[in-house]
Length: 134
Length: 64
Image 1 (cartoon, rainbow over the protein chains, first blue to last red):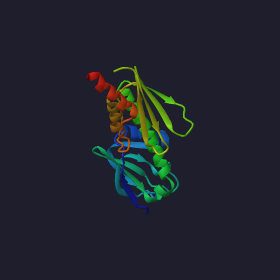
Image 2: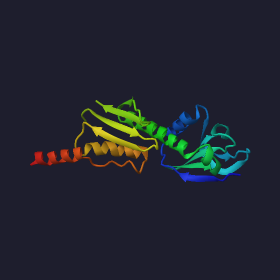
Image 3: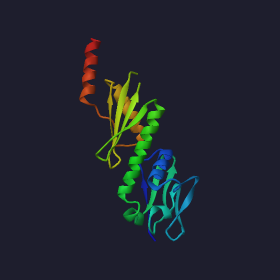
Image 4: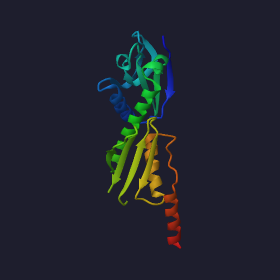
């Protein structure tokens, strides 16, 4: 049994995190619950960790456990098993979610404050956004 | 507020840098600060640029 590692994240906006996770794992692969639910391990057994955003193990990777994000007030805690951190939901993939999250938050913030957003071409792997206010 | 642009760059690690054009002085800091707050990032706090400091000096001069 692989133990879960609980990590406090910099994420604050659950809507943007949900969208970023869906973009990374695929539409319909991320569950959203108003009441936190228990995560399940690779063998289908419920674990003590609970989460509001859940990526079911079959979408995470081979012999994976559920991945979850628990909303605690203004904080969002990631529950990712030790096993999945090493092979399925690695640091690189977590960084990709962070990138997609930052993009979503920027779009949301820009629209809220009346900016028009254009995604600029970038050849260096970076996401470039131009926010214009007239 | 006059027309201005904010260029936002998100790198491979998810770190965000941003730059404002079209606003001089501390006004641009307010815009960047709000964006940094929305991102919840401790590392993306706005820094003063030479352009901003220059604009502030001009502001002081014009006030005399």
